[in-house]
Length: 483
Image: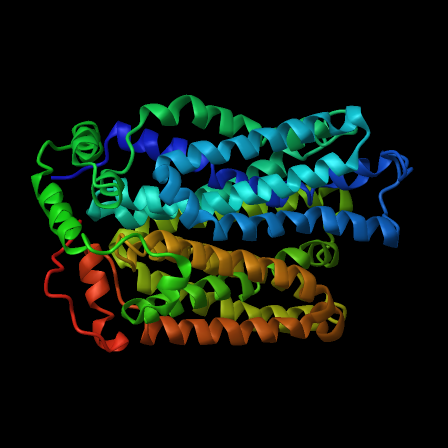
């Protein structure tokens, strides 16, 4: 029987903490008061450390500094296929760490150099790194994980993002690194997990599936399996080797597909539509709006300004806790129930949020309902961290890297688009902006129920065969089940 082993746990921790953890960390760290207040004491932007309100011109510049991260993320995500094909799963992670370490060095020395430009360049490099991480990590984890727990281990990637956000919130407190003297260390901390991964990941095996099917290196794949038997907790991996051989033979005439080739391939059309739609809805379901309104909600509830950071840490803790719950439930309830249920719960609290935000100035106690709505929405959002694992599960080996590029690219693109559009939506619609997000959640729930198949406990080929009829193609005769 396959079971969770220490080498498997080590591989998962090293992979996610050195990659997707930093995605969450670098999203949250620039929202902390310290960097916003202190970065603008550079050179041509003279600002006292005591000033906490930015001018319009400074705000535009800081917004550019923040948003350049998502531009880098788009570039990195669309480059996933190239890096995976060139360096393999593990190699792509190791190469991308150079971007993180260079970015961390620029962050850490920016104050001494009196250069905001260094922070902007560092944010761009870290964005490319994060875009690659969100594409490569689910592929690597999905291919080294035993089938019985593939879903749970795949969601660890999302869990590490929430842990990264919470870590940034904790380190940004004034009692830790959120001071005028220590904020460069706060920004440069992102290099520590990368250094850890560089030290450990080289000793972990490459995905045997990548070696055998993508690179036709059965000798290396056998060595990888000899090592990765410890991942399975059993020495009986003959079935997996045989299934990979069958898949390699079936795809012998098919090279790894490019993004354009995957987009033109009718046999994966609905898989691509599904991944793009789910990644779109993850960004557009309202989670960013929740965090935008967080301080407003806390103020209305009587939470003092100097304690709002601690309240935000509480919200981040709820996010991590519920993601842990989703990890435990992923291979019990299945992907479909968690994804549809999560969007449905988030939609309900969009309604409650709209009502409470409109009435909180008229009814004193209603502000507490706003806080409850925030927590309820976070619970719903955190229970459906499925998009990343679905990207790895819905495709065969030849199209998986390109599909990952497309899915992650859609996620980062709408992350960037929402960052640009949301301030105007909020200004024009006010609290009613949550009705827009309600519509997104309702459509997402319906799509998951009608279109997305349950992938729990299925092989990659079984999952692919579920779309044969919808894609209006014949099931390949040579294709056998893959692990």
